[in-house]
Length: 205
Length: 352
Image (cartoon, rainbow over the protein chains, first blue to last red):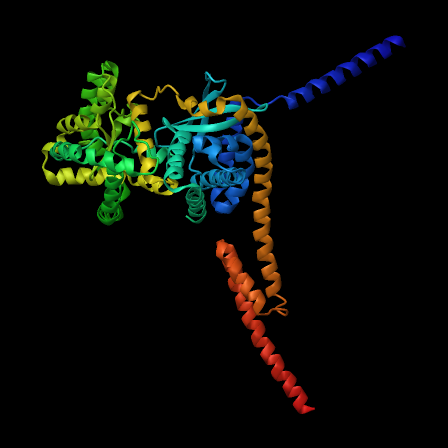
């Protein structure tokens, strides 16, 4: 009798234990590598249905994956460099908002269809400032592989993409040069207008 | 995304004599441009691009020349030439550059790669019928990208300032002797101007994708081209084993106060972004819907509604414009129906 109970308790305990560990697994944050791999998988999915979806469809489908895997606020901050401090709170919000939309729109525009592309995560590397770089390859049939390196930073507990380096060209550095140059020469409103123009161009072409 | 653009960024150049005269011209222009630059408000002269004033002018000039002269020619060439022939032509010129690749392999002490590239050149020149077919790549001998400017970089020659050359486009000081040596090592230079012109045409055609990409992606095409060019050249010189200095970009973010500020900002901004995006979508969608709703019953319209909707029209998406058109059409139909109704009413009252 007792023995029966004993086993019952033990099994109940074990069962409970397994639930707890499962719950812990769920709560455990994704590694930088996983964040990139997940995002690339979602990108491929959208590419496969790209033609059917059209720009608007792709934009809608990619909004969540982009927002969740990128630290868009930080990126927007970095791309305007020291000028960030000179912006008003309202301007900062406008910038982050319009920049987020630009990022999604450029994904939706550039990954419009599928012709056998594949992504491959190659390796992971720590950077001095506590970040991680995830090295990946974009494989396009019949063409040279494109090296895509994702620079990641932690935001709270989550790894987020803050930069993509394609064959040695850093998207962040490029945008930063462009944006700071425009801010200095033509001011904030001109910058916003130009970014909005790009979004429009992406959505129509 | 950037792949198209990057693959074609190889600016080793053909017209050597032209270049030498250019250097003299540039020195003349350069000094004036530095002066001109300090006129720009708060614009400091940067180390990588001290001749920005001059360069921007050249960039504009090249851009104009390209859109009025080269682009139409290239479009024509691409239009009349079947893709297979285009690839063949491109392969021939790439193969001829192969000699200079081998020389630069050796100058950089890359003996194994030099042997590979020699094999590549021989295979493509023979089995590939003068380089028309890129057999070597299929045989596993991938094309390497080497030129004398990269060799100079490997030898430790500094990059020097960025320059936009007339007609030839982006370069750095280091690239000028580089281009002269490469063109000397390229058979194209000795085959007379029709071949050289053809080579130039082919080069421009192969860059078509990247130029389109710049056109699409760049907010400031000049800066975009400069940064992408310099970065990609450094990447090639380092054979893709670039040390990341992108962390430098984060330096500003490192002071702790800023970080706290950012985090609180970030939360607020993102939620708002999210809602902003959605709200705006919902707004335009509902706007379209209400417009449609209004058109269908088509009964309570008056001039006021027309005016306000015209005002709204200024910030429009194509869908909204479509909706507006159908709305206006419906209004017209409504007015016509209204007149007819009046007539009927009159008829009825008359018959009474």
